[in-house]
Image (cartoon, rainbow, N blue to C red):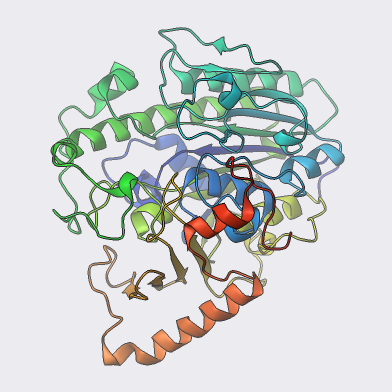
Length: 471
């Protein structure tokens, strides 16, 4: 450990899949700064989102617990405040905290996102320990004319012609500048909204659209013309939307290029402030995007396009550069990063401390990552629930509604086009994953309930969570 406690700069995108980054092999991506970060630190190449949807990811990130414990089983719920969270540990450990960007753990109304009763998170327990600088909002994805709140419901607008990720980066750079003059370490989180849709030209700076105007973005090999029957309304594609898929991808990549530029600005700010050497930088995303693969759009599914995420850690002189293939997932992030910082891990965390792996040393690691779907994206709707396991080679999944099983060999079938579950050759492997899944779910008291069961048993009827699996 260094003489002074390390700082933490935690950056996460919204809907950026692992395979959409240059360092992961995407030749169309324009991500030189993210790529540089990957080559300077450790690249967790098997990182996944336990529940590939916005609110569920954030709840697991801040608690180190699975969705079936946090209760954030769909979007637009208000989270319980009796968890010991990432922000609590930082604040109690003497860190100055900052949170900038999308929160998505407070609003309890489907829609009406711009009403301050939904977009403003009041100071106090609902900020989950982030008691320092706050420039955030609950949820929106209009990147021009955007706003944030500090400690009052008043909306603070960046300006009609100001691109939100650029302005959020400015706020974080200013925070870093101030923090560099303090003897107190900082723990700062920047939650970008990009490259989440709407993917339209008016939602992206022209400079970045121009970068991709002559590049083709055809459908992938696993594209399907029919909507997958298990998909909810957010995951289904209308005929007119299918016609827009190539344009959607183009604007998505343009948003990602802008995101990358801003990450470069953040790294330069750390250098200029003399903080780069003693700042742990983490870059990740809450989930990816399907774009028509397997007959789906959006997220909330175990397929690689949605579940696999970037997870990069840079800490010069301490974290060696390289690739780490352990099966890290969202619940492991909090204990791993806190351990790297030399801080106490809350005893009820359900993830694993993978700090030894991060430091290039041998250590315990998950046998596989558990993935969960507990309902439609943001509606109390049954019939979409599934559980899955992903290890270093295979993805195994089972749907609740009809017990259909899926087994993919991700190494030999990276587009997951061949379901091996019915092949006699894989009976022993299926039995292995079935047993592992039963054990893991039992350890979490995950009883594989229907979505509406959580509504009827865990909320007060107003989309506010009142209990959890251990509550």
